[in-house]
Image (cartoon, rainbow, N blue to C red; front, side, top):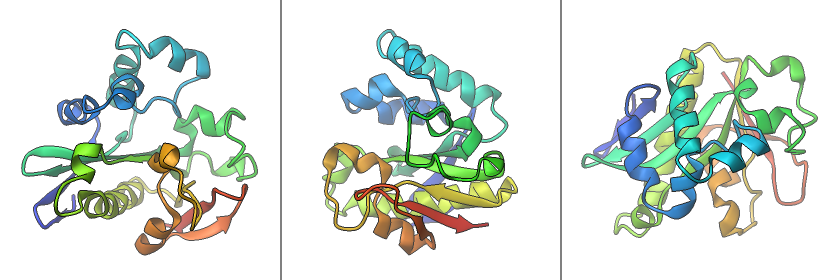
Length: 201
């Protein structure tokens, strides 16, 4: 996949789980979450928070799903970013009513439209001298789009923070301006602080 200025973007299915594990160990939330909040029921996610249950669930999905779980950014052999992506039907939170953000999106598109629910650049990478955060996110978004296109997706969507909104606790959903730079356009604003972005494949 894409490589820019020594940054490599790799799909994460059964391969590269070790890199993702290194990245997620950096801070507490990812260590326990393992990016399963959106692809689990509330009960599954809570039950898996301790004891490695969410990690085992993610690894099981990575092995059994037809499409990768997302892409990991690697710099100088070290993982520096993660972007979850996949068919919208994978994400229980998006379909079950737990998230009102995409409740009005056409349900007949759930298998053919992909979703980018989460992008993560850990603090150690964000503080790097070459501004690893922006450096990693844009190539990861392009890598997610490439995966979707290769899989025959009709479109790929995201639900980032709207322009002007600064909420560090929700930074993992991304920012509208970054998605615009990759070619996404705003198609809906379900709340004052979140937007739905879409790129046709």
